[in-house]
Amino acid sequence: MALLETKNLGIAFGGLHAVEQLNLQVQQGQLYGLIGPNGAGKTTVFNLLTGVYQPTTGSFSLDGENLTGKTPVEINKKGIARTFQNIRLFQNMSVVENVLVGLHNSGRATLLHSVLRLPRYYREERMLEEKAMELLDVFGLAEEREYLASNLPYGKQRKLEIARAMATEPKLLLLDEPAAGMNPGETAELMQTIQFVREHFGMTILLIEHDMKLVAGICEQVTVLNFGIELAHGTPSEVLQNREVITAYLGEE
Image (tube, rainbow, N blue to C red):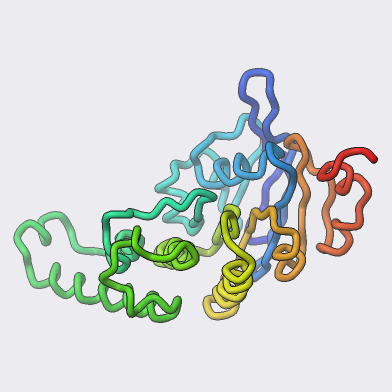
């Protein structure tokens, strides 16, 4: 059974079909690429999978559980976390505070515990801070724990966003164009980070990316969208040699 499965998933805005009859199967532990030209519907798929948009057709499930119609908070608690094309860190909070935000779902102390500052509240705060520091250490950000997120170099801000997503302990990580705005050196380091996340955490990753070198270098399977419709599916080498895919990206010769 696939970890993530979509069945005829689609959404229309008025008469425009942004995504139509999408059928994906992402296996446990897989690093899967979703690619396509600008406006192909890739980020719309992520918005469907995270509850930002509600589908007009079809359904999707995670680990056999139908999540169609659930809210973003409910979907996150079920095990789907994401990053964004435009980095969405809390820029005026510290690096460690950003990760602590991601850890809040795992907290068990009630509002009463926090208001009255009961012993359980302090125990939990220490536990969450320890977890946050473990994650920062894994991502090579421990030395910058007290830095404002806005003061980190761009590549490290990307790492922090992934670390915060991992703090929610997801089953599936959605990465929306993580290499956007990066130079070749930063992109190479990002590839290593993504592969590390997959191996260290046993994480299943669905990746949207324009950088074909990155996709070919780390993804095992790729689906190509064009105008919201699946154009091709297969290994990166198969897909990138597909004439229809070449035409969609480069236009007719």
